Length: 146
Image 1 (spheres, helix red, strand yellow):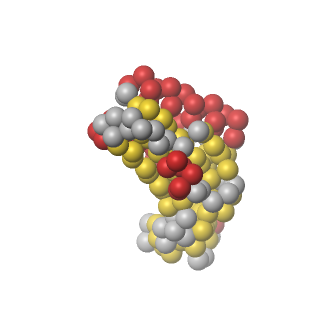
Image 2 (cartoon, rainbow, N blue to C red; image 1 turned 90 degrees about the vertical axis):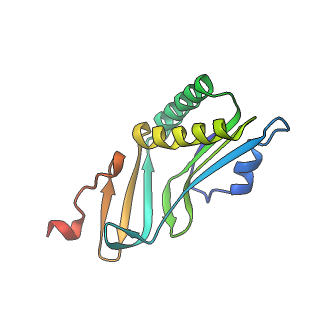
Image 3 (cartoon, rainbow, N blue to C red; image 1 turned 180 degrees about the horizontal axis):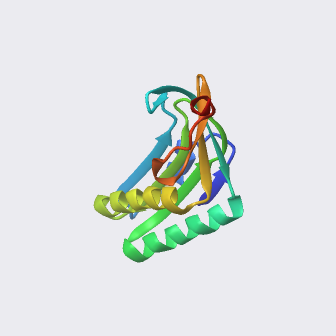
């Protein structure tokens, strides 16, 4: 399952999408909105995506994972729009016969997704906002430009 959605990510659905009797391990990663960044209080995140290209690139990441690890199933869901504190903006689940493959494939998925998918994050602070580039580089926020 590959999905870009403006809805809250349902962890039970994410888990269910990768469960199979052959799986000895399922790894789930959730990237959530935390209440701080670079010494500032974050009130929410906002995401934008070029959805058709993001889905295509995520599909390529899935293909790379299947070529490198012996996994059963993988699901990658990314949320766009407003993501409040403590809610997930990205969910990745991987099932494999052995835990190590599930862990490694899941880690690779999030790292590649952040590097290559056309999905952009804006941090909204108490007094300003800033777009965050891939790799965590930050464009100056409005309050910092003044």
